Length: 267
Length: 257
Image (cartoon, chains in turn red, orange):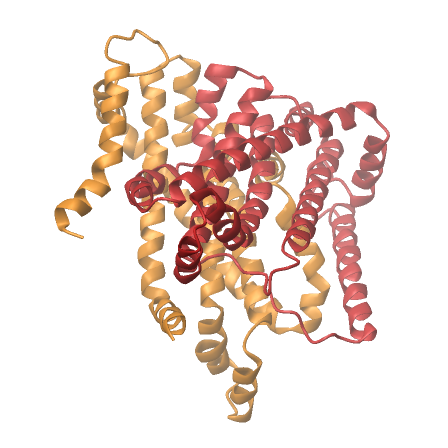
């Protein structure tokens, strides 16, 4: 992303205003569609009804319990996947032989859609939180690992050789040469993985029925509590926005020393 | 590298893993883990024939239609929103919100609005996989080179020609990055829409196997999904090389100099 030359406060505020306007406009259209009878309110309740329901949810302990369940599987899965990917990535990345030898295997395993593992998860773990974790970890592991491997491949050969000739050992080189180079890539991977992990956490709850927001959505849908279902969908969207924001802030913090924030690698 | 060595690198680890799997499962009677040969046989008998025509092809068809519309709409809307400043400002927060909604929750929602049928499944795929393409296109259009932009303007290139010869090529790398994400989301949604509400299709069949404890068949289904994912990745790489060969070439040159 490139920053525009520091815009005056005027246009900025205007853009913000328009953005808020867009959201209001969206809710107005949503409100009007069932009210005018374009879509039956049995399928699409008016926005006001859903927002009121969402407000009620925010005061219910059961709702926060579901949020906590979802966020626990998200955080735990993401943490396991990230740590595993960093360890595996540093090991594979530090040797040319391993990089070449694992290439096909990684390219084969990576595109397997994690939802393919749903039956397996059900079979082994049933509807406990481990099922969710299996899917979340599998999906987010590849995101982090791949970006990290790109990052390690990007290490400047001259810098590495210089470090070598100054007598830095393998570990010291990992710490002072490879790690700083790969960190921006790692953060990109982490940001992508954070979003994917939420998708998979909700999916597992929706399909398998492990406790969390996804399960509630399935329950409200089959129980015909339509405005509750829409309210929960809005809630998942808000969690998604918060996660994206947090990931971006973290990225900026961690990479504040970096001359440019890099984009995703296109390969 | 000699060709022999290259082949060894390519097949070495996969063969090693399969041999390991074979050796470990040789004497085992573990119900959950099929033996490699057994799995290969099941793969053949289960998926070749009727089931391929009745379950796999329709699933793939829905995926193709869904992705086609998601990518097409994403690019067109992205170009439109990206090149109109007020529209971009108006819609950007809203689009960010839509992207942040985990796409699988749209399955029960669209089931209500459309009903359980093919168009619902296609709608699920479109509504989930359009966002990466759309937002990347918007972002790309915004970040076009301002010098090139001014040059275009002073040469009087505008309208369709401007889009075709300036904006679209400039944005293609970003679009392709978005498409790559869209493909995997689309595949996930294809499976989920069939697992949640369906009586046919790949996702439904795999869950059915699992419920009946047909373990080798279930594993073979997972392998089929993996192969589809791999196929998509290969097609994508092929298309990307064609579409972006100039871009990779350019990057190599700037890296060298």
